Length: 117
Length: 111
Image 1 (cartoon, rainbow over the protein chains, first blue to last red):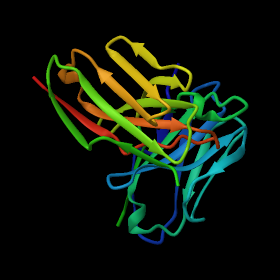
Image 2 (image 1 turned 90 degrees about the vertical axis):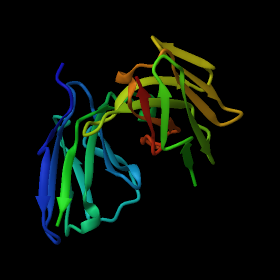
Image 3 (image 1 turned 30 degrees about the horizontal axis):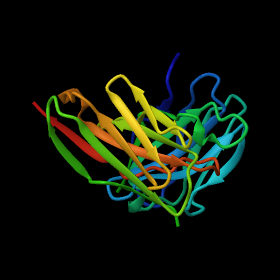
Image 4 (image 1 turned 90 degrees about the horizontal axis):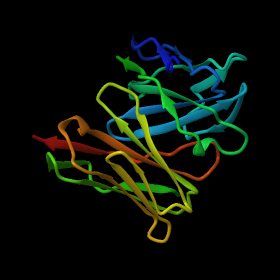
């Protein structure tokens, strides 16, 4: 079974631009979560989608948004990029059955390394 | 607010010894707790999940304990090897469709 695929692997953008990151979950997984990882803050939860619905959102500004498609693939978008948005963005999929998804192990991709200059 | 603390940012141990990593949490009561391993430049990899009604869980050289009274989980790697060197993350889960992670402990196993 193929793992979680994230594209692109690396991205360099300029302040003020916007960016879209893509995530293809493991086949059969309906839940997709996004995390931002920085050396100082560790893994910070962005949002979680299940069957095209956002079930939870972390404490990030509205510049961060996401969506999930009917095939469970997901995208996240960051508008008006700031230097502080430089980070590793990780996507994780899980079965995410009814009820909380915390009891399902998360399967992570290797992330998109975003650098904002 | 919910807080997760992993005992130290870095832990160095000699090959063959047992590594013990600590995860403490405050201000909530997780029903599950997960442990992950992360290597540089890669996403975390799931290792073990332990439920609140389980005191201990084992998988090969790994052992996890979960003490809901102390609000603490211990993660042990016995007969450690240099290949065990990585950052280990704990993630107590308590609903809300999200998993919150500690900042991790970087383990270095010295040959």
